Length: 337
Image (tube, rainbow, N blue to C red; front, top):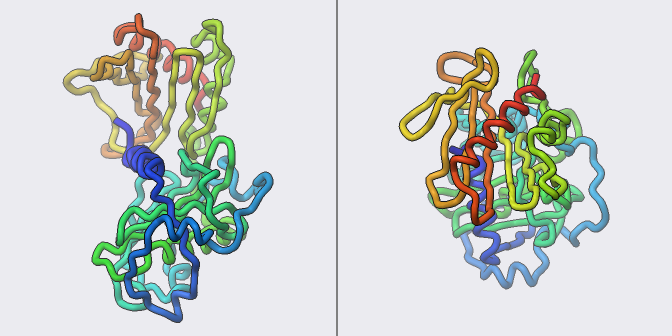
C-alpha cells in the first residue's frame, strides 16, 4: 500500500482538477486575529491572489533542489523558535509521516487551535495554476473548505514539484490560507538560510535518488527496450516514475512498519538473504508490486522500498506483471547502498 503522503498527494491533485484553487493576500498574523469569512473561489482567482504577480522564468535555487531537501529535518523547520515568530503557542505533538514530512498543532494568536502539515518535495504540483508568489516562487493555493487550505511554493516547473504547507483550523474561525501562506514563506526562508539536517547513516536510502536507479544499466537491461525509450521523472523526494510505451512503474522509499507477507501476497527472494513481498493487483488491470525492508531500524520500523508495475496493454495479465516487477526489483536492489 502507498503511504499517507502519496494518498494525500492524490487527493490534492483530484481536488485541484475541480478548479477550487484560491489565493489569499497576507497580513501580519501577529497584529490581527481573523474572523472566518467565506469568499467564492472565482472571486479569489480573479483577484490574482498571493503576494504580487506570478514569477516567470526558470527556478534555479540549489537550496530547494530535491538532492538538498532530502536531508532536511522537516520537523526541525516547525520548531518552537520558528513558530514563535507568529506568536503561535506550540503543542508538543510532532507527527512525522516520513522523510520530508511533518505536522504539528499550535494555538494561534487569537487562541484558535490549528494544525499545520509540511511536505518538502511535494509531487503532482500544477505550476500553471499559480496565482501569486511566495518568497519569490510561484504560489499555488488550494482552499479545501472553510477550515483548510494548502499553500504550495513551486520549486520545479517540469515536472511540477514544490513545498506545501497545509493549515487546518479544525474548529474554524481562522484564515487557513493566510496562515498557510505565512508559515510557508518562513519555511522557504529557513531552507535558504541554515535548515536543520538529518544525519544519514551508512546504507540508508535517505539520500538515494531513485530516478538514478531507474536509469542505471542494471535496471534498463532488465526493463528491455520494447521499442520505446524509457521516460524517467521524479515525483517527490523519494518517489520516481518511469514510463515506456504501455508500461508504467514507480518506486517509493520511506520509513515505516516493516513489510511482511499477508493473505493474498507472496514471499519472494530478491537476492541471497533478502526477501520481499509480492502483491498482485486487485483490479482487472495488469499490475503488481514488490516491497522489501531495505534496512532494519528496530522491531517496529524499517527503511522500505516499494516498486509498482502497471501494463496497460489489452493482452497483459497480472501473472506477467508480477514476473516483470520481480525481475525489475532484483535489478534495482543492485543499484542501492
